Image 1 (cartoon, rainbow over the protein chains, first blue to last red):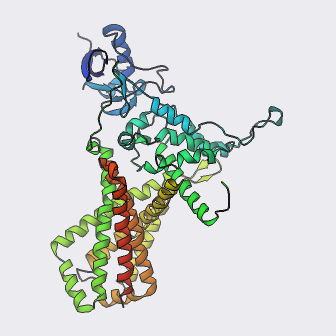
Image 2 (image 1 turned 45 degrees about the horizontal axis):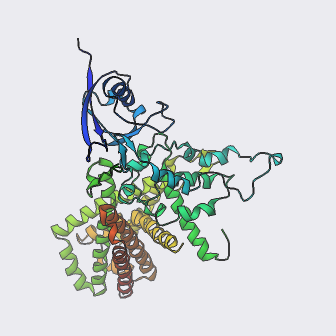
Image 3 (image 1 turned 180 degrees about the vertical axis):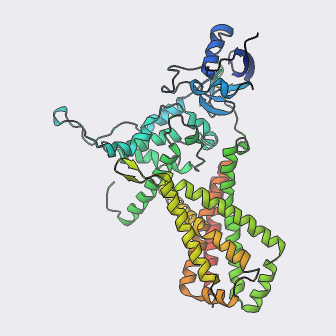
Length: 248
Length: 128
Length: 113
């Protein structure tokens, strides 16, 4: 009896031999406990060693294996073959990013934007070690914890039509991480992030499509983070009008 | 060496996925809301011109075409209200200590306010 | 910073107008768009209500804030359908129309007696 199999249609782009991308069909064994990443690894090991793609932890914490699976941004280590079987599965590089080769995208834009929002604790003055730890209550932790779960997988950028239309948009993950640090009681850098977060290319570009939060594998809810920053921006405006002498 | 390949984005991207289409429909409710308000403003302008003018105007507004528009506008306005209230818990996060106030309470309080305000307005206008 | 504070201002109007529209527009469509033409409401009562200054203030808010909400939303909808290249004229047209609507509402409400 023949082993059940499933077809994968995979986006190929080899810049040294072709100008336009193509799709290549492969047949892989169907195993009910396999994810798309298992199928890709099988292909690369047994069928076509030229296939290029990123992966690492294979368990949904590193954020490396994000790709479009049947048009939806997914971590391929979390996309089970059984959810698609017996229909063919179309695998493409993450949307809204330039393609380097096959399923590998260029993520320079995201990394630059991530750095730009200064996603680290900023202090006016660092406490020397002998002064003790920065203490934080469970409630203070709870206020930002959700936004700290981001694994920088960029599925939200692939889901965001505004990022697709406007490459200058800072984007969901970067803003969610700025929000995470703005909410952190140990952080004093809100003013330093302001120019990036409240800029024209930042929170105000967002039209709350909300698809970023739908595809996020870690329930970060970047859409919520962006709307909360909009409220902060609006309150900031009111404060600056009513109390122009205050420094932020 | 050829550079990275940029895939073009179609301007009908919002037709490709159910959630994108629902988003676009939500945004387009603003057209119906604005249209209704403009038509209502015209109605008030006629009200200001006196009872005979207003009665004739209302008779026009009782036509099938106008009724159909107002039903469509009502559907659009309801879709705006429901999507708006359902999204408020994402915008306003309320916390008691470590625990987050369940989103259903925040959205729910909006619905309660909506119901109360609507009843009050109906009562004010319909009592005679 | 000027650009950012502009956007915060329009978004605040969008937000306030969205809440007003969500709470009030449905019942007004039912009352003024459907019930009144069908004769289910006393015209004298409507006129008496509308002539009251508090009602006029209420109605002004009902028009002004949602007009700016719709302007902001439609502006961004046009951007989202690929017309971002015409940012400035679109913004001027949208907020300009909302301003004209608001002024017209003020003028018309003042004439009701």
